[in-house]
Length: 137
Image (tube, rainbow, N blue to C red):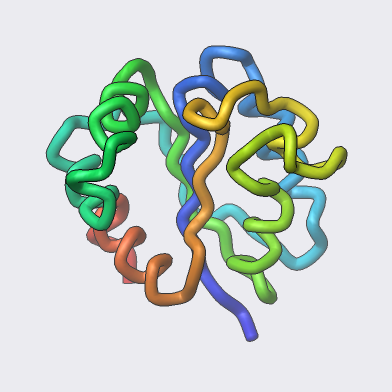
């Protein structure tokens, strides 16, 4: 079953020059395609919508500040089981727990700055895609 998901390459990935490396790993997956890609600086309004479920948690403000600290690459990736696959490719949030070969396992340094976001479910993907690409049908 083909799916569509949102991927964000966070400010640390952009700052460290990892855009090409990470996109290359996505493109290397047979059957996955990048159907939209933009370099953007995110404003607080879009981040509040995206991270609404985390409001009030101790990491919320530092996360929003980090996500505003520089440009991000916003992608739409489509393909067979792409939601599950991208989560596996990204690896767990904690780079120490992330397996070698995963993006966070190979390049991650700290939990808060964890290089990549990938929607965690079909419902999240639909919600997040509407936030970042409202004109996408």
